[in-house]
Length: 588
Image (cartoon, rainbow, N blue to C red; front, side, top):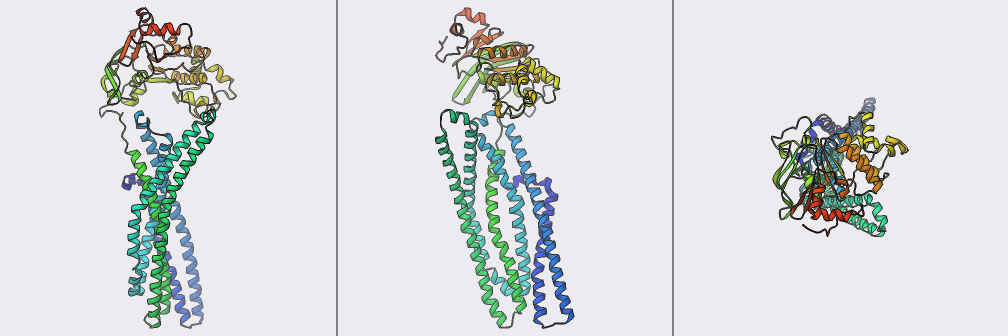
């Protein structure tokens, strides 16, 4: 599974090579220090107090100084280069994850929490840095150290060296055994962290609702429960690692005891020089030091693998809406002729939303969709830009099946204004220019004028440079709608979809928005979803949807004269313009 992340490491071959090279040299430098001590002991034991002996001591001290300076430099190179590679890989993985998230269709997001996806993108990918900058270098340098020290120990005393290896098989078995329990524990911990992030994101976004319904105590309790779950899963994982580390230290202690017993007896018998025994103990510390550090590295490996699995799961998600292998780029500006041919759709195989929809929307005309909540109005409109794909039949744009067009070129022909306007944290200017980033200042201001937004924008403290807060929290509903319309004006797409664009505002604001929309619709193919029938009187074609599909179709005057469902709705809304579609509206 970790092999799937190797392509992300390839651009960082240079820092990774420098990391490996510095680690190799660092091991060599560390192996020299005990040999200096050995030489010093031999000189002192010889009882030689000549000037040459003093010069040798001075030389040994200078060599030791050079060794420690070299070690400091190599440790810097190893640490910094490992972090350059580690954080570089993390940034590239996050970039790939975000790009992949943008490719996934809306159906993927229907049952996903934003906090969970953020946790995978940020927290889980963050663990890859531990793997690249810490765990892998630590494992590599410790393995090199084990090999180097083993060679030195063998050269001094093969018999003692083999005795020091007695605990190693036990440690290796323990590492394998603990991985079976530790890895699932860390995976559970990452899952709990994702759940915690998800609920925090929801609650912080919904703070107004929490205060409105005085849910502070209940939500604090819910967050506390998640915190306790995360703490519990974390402590269970750490408990397993806390058991593993003392076991490694105990095994290392057994090795030291073996050397004390057998090495001491060999020194007393005269078969092992005292200088070699002291040097053996120094090398022995270097031998078991990496064994101990491997336990910490093993914890980081398990954490990283758990995070990498969750990242890999997300990257393996396949979008159900994608370009066909032979997708056609729609060049130039589309005319905007839209046809629905025997279209059917279902979110679930046994839950059909509608069937056998046949509609023709000529270029430059206005189609209005009305009907009760759940009749499929928004779904039907969402099939045009392929937010979902038809279950049966087909939709064409200027004669092309929309599934045969590239998503980018198809959606580039469409502007959408929704009831629930989403504005980004930033300035008014940023949000209007979201429609077309390369627009000039004059074009942006003209878009605001057309959207009837110019007046309120100029009254803001900073005008177009006013920060509007997350989701436009500092603006009213009508102001947000007009900014969304300005964004659509600036996009200047030939097809316009309006989904309940005036349903959440007062009558005066609705009039301003309606004026802006009428300007926007000129020369464009427009699909309008509306509850307020007053906004669609001028539609070229009104389609009434119900549970069984299309109930009625025609112009406003035709449908009123027909005396069916639409006529009943028109009569119900005539005295009070604010009345909206009743769920108990009479069927045809």
